[in-house]
Amino acid sequence: MASTDEWFVRLPDGSVVLARSSAAVRHHLETGRLPRDVRLRRSPQDPWGALDRFEAFADLARRGRGRAPTTTTSPTPTPT
Image (cartoon, rainbow, N blue to C red; front, side, top):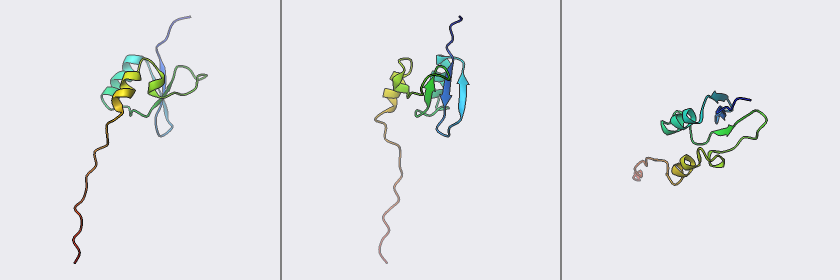
């Protein structure tokens, strides 16, 4: 049996894509083409898991934590 490095990637909208390698998944995560809240699995029989469940991507999951989303605040309206 040939070894494979393919990953099934479930996007937040529920759609699933097939990545041909761990390197491809990492590249798309690092460039922002894949969001950090994707779920992954190796085969259709495996359960879905978050990035931190897989050694190949655990460092990316840790790197994504602790970053607060940027928000803009609008000025407080003055009473009239």
